Length: 137
Image (cartoon, rainbow, N blue to C red; front, top):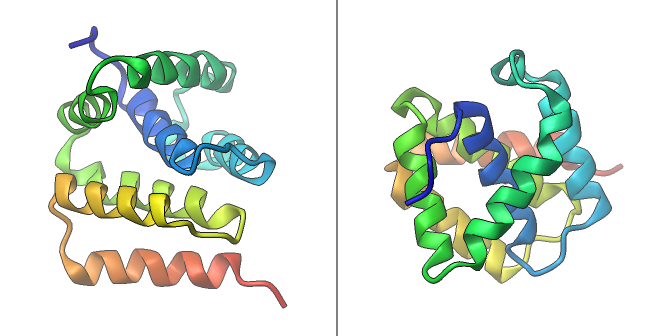
């Protein structure tokens, strides 16, 4: 396994994995990642110029044998349990950003729910909130 990463970098990894899940990182997904890093309190001590290097490190890890499992394991051991729902919420927002949820993204969300052992009520609330935020007129 790779060297330790910060909590904020682990959250960036979750967003990058979600954005790349369908093999295309859209401009809206990348913009969503950038906005969340700039504005959310969990990233207050994170230099937003580190997003791209963190995304590249995540990409390198994903390219390795069993890269997705290794990355998810690194994220889950880095994040305190109290941030599992935060990580899931970030992933849901990235998935919703381009208004086109694909099967690969749905599968990754299921993997995150399982890895983080999130209860159904928490998951439903997070997903419903994203649905409301990303709805168009």
